[in-house]
Amino acid sequence: MSVLPYKDKNEGKKQQVASMFDNISKKYDLLNHVLSLGIDITWRKKAIRLLEKDQPKLILDIATGTGDFAIEALALHPDKVVGVDISAGMLEEGRRKIKRKKLDHLIELQMGDSEKLLFPENKFDAVIVSFGVRNFENLEKGLADMHRVLKPGGKTVIVEFSKPKKFPMKQAYNFYFKYILPRIGKLVSKDNAAYTYLPESVQAFPDGNDFLEILRKVGFKNTKCKELTFGISSIYIGEK
Ligand SMILES: C[S@@+](CC[C@H](N)C(=O)[O-])C[C@H]1O[C@@H](n2cnc3c(N)ncnc32)[C@H](O)[C@@H]1O
Image 1 (cartoon, protein in one colour):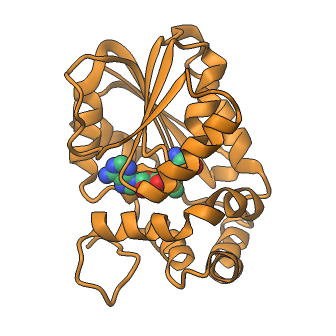
Image 2: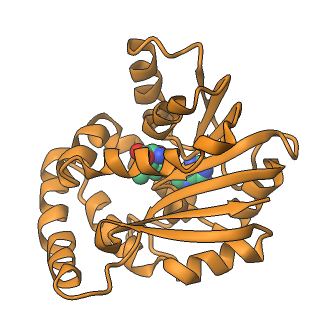
């Protein structure tokens, strides 16, 4: 059973996720950095550093949202980063930010669904996703399409929340995620469901070896997982 943001609505996960991110798009960046105490920024940086040796020239950032991972990827000096997302609201915020930072010649944001990417196979040198895969309606389909558009020898780097396994971080994290984060999220974003969906969806999402297994199932090789900050998040790497 997949976890849905709005349990009282009949729409499928994809539509609900898109509406939810449209709703919170204006507060998304602020809440991200406040709720994670800014650690999310260091997680994205660490993930991008894993591609330093590969020097990818054309990068696809899936579920780009407001574009933070795409902007971080510029540290690799690519020719271009293309970001796709299903939420028009998030893309609008992203475009505004990218223009303000005068990066619009390097980053192009497009409406696009991870499960039906409108790119030919073997196009990108690297495909990256931060905090996106948990929101896919069909995880395997999304990962398989990422594999399809990646060049042979290219890498995917995925950052996603995971579940800390050890005392006392496990207990502290559960308390924060269950009781503190939804309250602050609701107060600031004015969306009743978004920050309850966050801990619920993390709880139900495969992490560690379970996620690596799915990556291998859709065709990725040399898969690896690196835990970040006591396992609150993880970076997953795979090659085509
Ligand atoms: C938590 S945000 C992450 C945004 C950004 N990557 C970041 O690190 O801040 C998740 C994003 O995934 C997008 N998303 C969910 N399902 C998607 C899909 N099937 N295809 C493309 N984007 C999707 C949502 O619209 C949302 O903008």
